[in-house]
Image 1 (cartoon, rainbow, N blue to C red):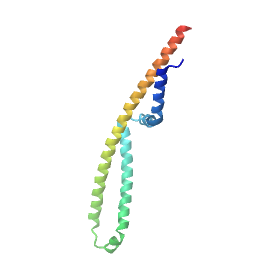
Image 2: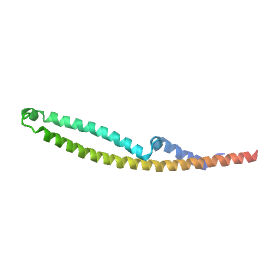
Image 3: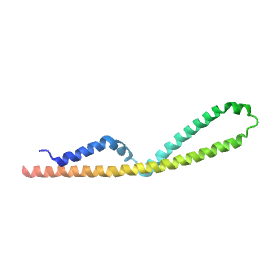
Image 4: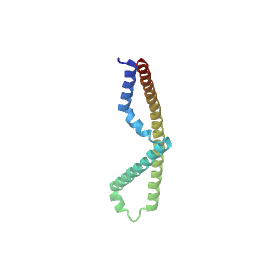
Length: 137
């Protein structure tokens, strides 16, 4: 005989596993602080790469000006400006990624708690069925 409650629970679990569950189970391998640090480190690397590419593109765009004024440009001042902008951009992205990934992890944990509750209720249903079948024999 089909237990409708069990089918409902298994369907909800299957839908969760198919969509958010894959990523949530990956996040579950980490502590919140470790996960956030890893994502911040990735953000640091990719932001640095992107910033270098943007600076190189701006340099290529202004290459004629740079070549014409190569002897009179104040290179230390330009370097300080590039570094200052880099620090500002990096700070914004790092804070944003820390907050964003911490929230993402937190929501993931809430969904996992619901999933584990469903898993426990499914286990209880199976144990009730086993005790019922064991008492009939």
